[in-house]
Length: 314
Image (tube, rainbow, N blue to C red; front, side):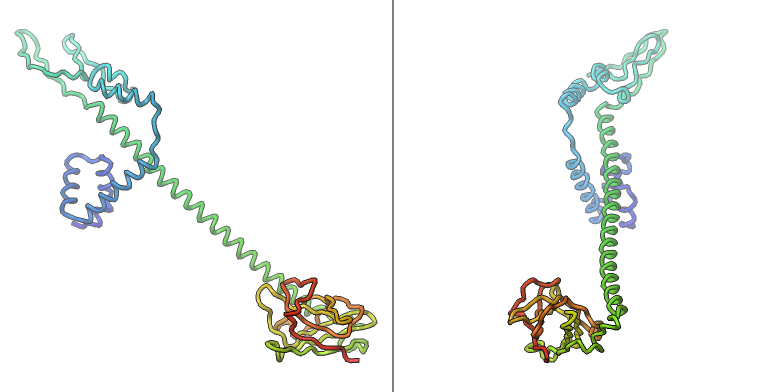
């Protein structure tokens, strides 16, 4: 026997829920005793059935419990039959030869009576199935409906969860793309916006230029700073400067009477190494210094983070 095909055929589910004829039930029980895989599958289904029933169990109202107990107490009697819902009641007694023959009453003992002469023999009708069996079949069908509904709802919510996750990932990707585009546009504007001809820092003799060499771990790095005393304009060229650590940014300071005055933050890296960056205007300056600050700059310099400094040439 192909065990895996037998397991996936659906017969084991019907067996666990008591929906197989007796002949097929015996076949399943034989397979369970012979094949460990079949037994394991049946045990798993029974366990899932118990978990499902426990998960979705709802305590019935006391009135329903009392009515069920009364039905069970009067099982197989006409009184108990009247208490059942219409769809579960046994057929009404039929009349044969003018006499009513009950189909539900449970007589403790019936003796076969010989027909009298001249009377038509009456065959005894088979007893109706127990109302208890009908109740359990009704409950089994309800459980199967709930199980199918649970499977549908699980699939529905799984689809919803997957959809929300996909939307979230799409939003993250869109946000990252917008940030990259914004950065690229900023660099493009920096490249495409030349300094006005009349104040071109590189060709204007009113600009005083000085190079700020790096020290310590910034040895070999160079930043050129130009300052126009008349217009108070400041331009910077980060000729040889590395990219700052994440969340940090380099900031330019003007040295005025031994104090550092904020002149703005600037970009670094190969893409901007040859670009002139306009900084904040400075009214007076004896020199310039550069520190490493948090991204966006700081109102006060971090003196322990000074990267380079130099005095202006006179």
